[in-house]
Image (cartoon, rainbow, N blue to C red):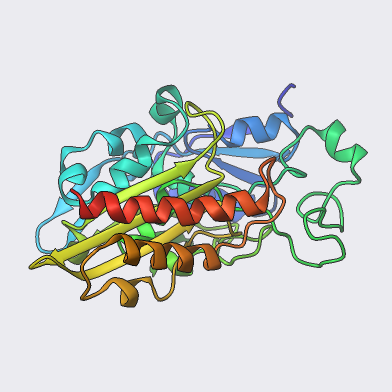
Length: 327
């Protein structure tokens, strides 16, 4: 499948990039690593007139610890760099573990943390060739008005499948967004809408620039577990991130987040209260697993059944909690 014709723009600063976005907001796509955008363009999911290649903007790269504050990560920092960062592995291990599961080493060398945060939502009916989608009558997310996942519904149920966002949610991450009017920061949990075809709060003239991890989230023990058919390349079909801080053998704080089973990555409400003050046992792990399974809302967006994916959320949550307990 060939790429559609487009004009490549290569800014060297955030200000220049935002200027291009403001000028061509109606027909432009941002290229960071390109590991998701380029295949989607070949499938004719996106046919922009302009592609904004931001890889030459040096200020958007790198991991910069800030004493007393936390750490700032440029959105162009590769997943490989995050996976192998000694600082992140020591202080924010759930993030390095999640990054290490993304696709394959070759793709992690290209893919970026910003691209993983902004990853397009996916669906069995959407992520196909133009010929295939045309034969199915298209869908709400692209060219049609029907959701094949929930026929008769008016909401797109395409699922979010990024690996690092649930880890970032557990770490209370914030993101910085640049626009013609300046920069703003917001918690990552407020970045996603939960709507498959309009899944993020990022305007056409805005650019994600940085990720911030607070010092208060440092040094939590963390685990990420992922279900996929092919272990070397696939997107998650269910993913669980857990972080725990312990004191005197008891849990003093904990957070649990899911991916690939909802139109947005989600924190599991009630998990922290269920774990806090407790000793991590198999019985407690089972209860938290049940809570996570009830939070997961998988539908028929992949080849695996929703029932199986929900059950694997339960299993992975239990395994993650016990892995931390035994570490």
